[in-house]
Image (cartoon, rainbow, N blue to C red; front, side, top):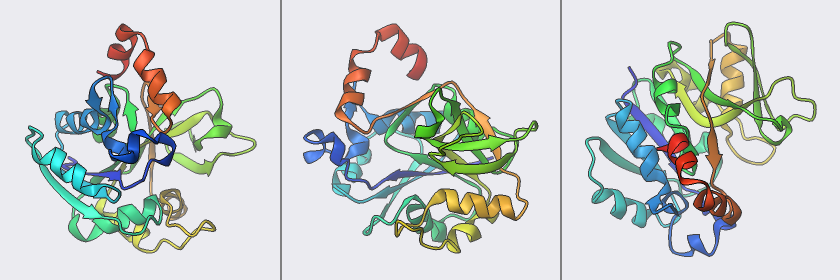
Length: 239
């Protein structure tokens, strides 16, 4: 059973200015609740006992907020001084994580069943995915009939699948070595999909876990869309 989760929350959220001038991206309020609070609650409900925040911009606000947040999990914080990619963020947590672990983006809203679906997936390595109508805009996985991922691509021009990577990942402790071996990408970052490709190439099974939906909260217009969404629909999807 997975008991540890790593929340990626170091980004500056420049597309959310002026909201993020004084508030870190993962604490941007959506319908009166800081974005990451819903994630933390979902993690705890799924049995997570230890939550490691990868922090950077306005990190003191995150530490302060969760220092007074009522919770049953242990909270820890690791500073990502250089924003060197999602893989770089995960690499920072490796020295303090010995068991299987979850990685989740702190700047999205996820369907009510999302976290539990990935945590409880039979496979030790799994990626949460959602079906999308426009796969060329997303990181896309292709899975075989057994649900095993055979390919992961970033915004493919000719997508072979409509399963978009949704920002929740479960990794076995054995996966740590692939993050440790990550080379820098062309963008000069350590990228999580590259570690997953290395795992797949080595014959490690990585399963696709489909859940009902997610909503990236990266722009002011996306916040506006959530704020104006029908209340019953929002509750059914995210609460």
